Image (cartoon, rainbow over all chains, first blue to last red; front, top):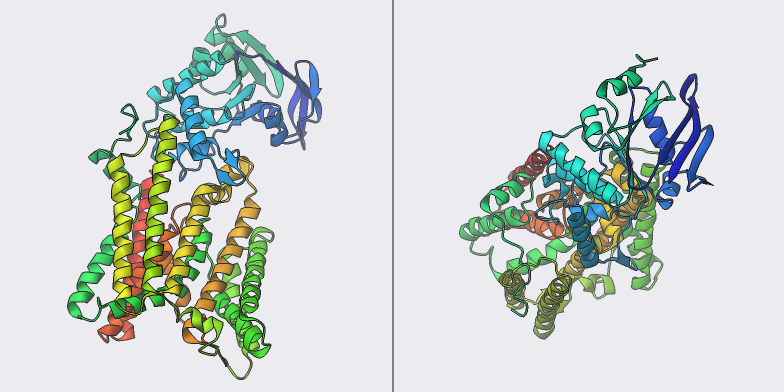
Length: 239
Length: 396
């Protein structure tokens, strides 16, 4: 269980977050929703180590942990897939999956071991790419998103943060990515999904956490919550 | 076939082949085609062009500029440019000449010192680019002028240093492999290539990975054997295979292996493809960039030394005139993208072969240098146009 407790962060005159808490359990997909400026990005940046909070902190299984930079977060098993994917389009799928953590002997790449692991990983996630040795530039948007998500799993993380994974995708490709998110849950990973698309959120998440103006503004079990209730929490209409 | 269940990678369907072409994945085919056209055109216009003497000269002429071009590829892969390579090659050749001729150093030591000087120049460029964040275009443009100035200053009023014809440096370009050595080398290269192909194929089958069909592997080994044997045959009919060509070829192969099989090489391509992605993946982008500039300048220095060896002298024109543009043009014509992240070291070999053939052929036809410049420019423009179109295909 990874928890963020009582997180506050101020940027100059703007109070981005104020006493926000969030629990992320293994095998659970939590959707983080909120209007623009609600503090979603700031919270994600704090959990993934890109930004330090003014107060509050992260706990793993109840123990406080220090996350000073993205590298710390990765070491603790927190992996982030950014909205802009951060893939090298000139490199093939295998090279992208292992970028920065290449399997090697001394400095020499172990191509075969990497390709074998890449195939196993993609197969286990049911990601279908005909030839994983072609440059990523030749893949569809959904395939690229799948590669980016698969890449987050290389370091055996316990939490995967997905920032707007379906924002740029068509209907069919969105369905593929949502399937992929379900398989992350089946693998026992904690998944934090940031999305503007309530249809996607309702389709794939177990729990919805709403932020509004930098505070917790509601938490729903997806199965029980109506779309109206979630929208009301996002806009503040219920208050 | 030992393993009937082995997955064989299927050849591309026509649709996929077109898709790859649209993405600029042309490989070496356009260049190979260009070389055939050049051979036919000049061969029919002048019977001397395809003579073994002229082709051997061609091999000799390629090495120096080709080595500089190899260095240019290192920075082009990052999407940067090195305009100083010509001046640096001249400067380092002068450093080598001064140390060996005026100060009577051991020639090997003088060469080593010149390469270190090149490395320092590259380090300076790299640090100005990464630390001060000056555009590489400006850093190396300053280098182009500045190092040329230092060269003139070092040469002083004399303006020329002759290297003795029987000295070590001059001998580099007047050493020819005897036939037995050339054939042994050829056989060795083909054997190593075939063995590595077979071993890698076996290991892939063992790991249950798709492999290329055996006939394709055989065809590639056969193709290499034919090309190498043809080259050796032609050059042995004249003076033999020049040592200079062997040196240049070794550099091309070694750097290709480094780029494709080491983490450093992988990270070069990554930085050239997407800097932000590379940085987020934990790659030390600054170190890769500095190293690329160091490599570029060291290879330029070595190219300058080879050039001095050919001329048996260094003078105020060393590394000047069109050497830099030839080197950049060769890299791009050979298929290295100006936008970074795409290209292999063989581009230096193929590109310089195209440019040098055109130059050489036009000399034989006594074409005026004005026409020669315009034709070379047209070829360069064509290569960059292909590169740009390929990039646009990628973006969509």
